[in-house]
Image (cartoon, rainbow, N blue to C red; front, side, top):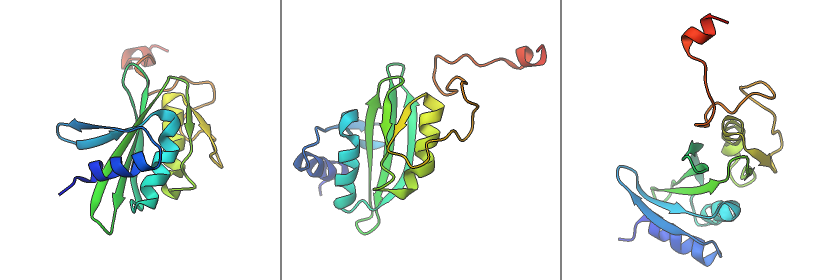
Length: 151
């Protein structure tokens, strides 16, 4: 039987999205797409029956911010992970119109990793102050407990 990632790869290819499948130990198969094609990939996955967004989050890889979309098909009982790597300070194009569940996670991801958010109806900050450093970037220096006490 074809894996859900392989099936999704076929769906994305037909939709004109460049995709590669990576087998990650402990996670399974992951579909990697170019950042500029991520919204198109997410839309194609939704049309193919992946009707539920489980999660959207970011990872600082040291070379950019990897945005991870974890999707599920409730009818087929399948899941797929789609990843797209953005440059630091890049633009995360909102997929909230496709998956309304992305509204808050997109804001969190953009804020925590210093990304710009495009096409979101309310791109305001949720957790940090204006002008603060993105706290989840590896390059952000956080104060130690001792430094905070000595302030």
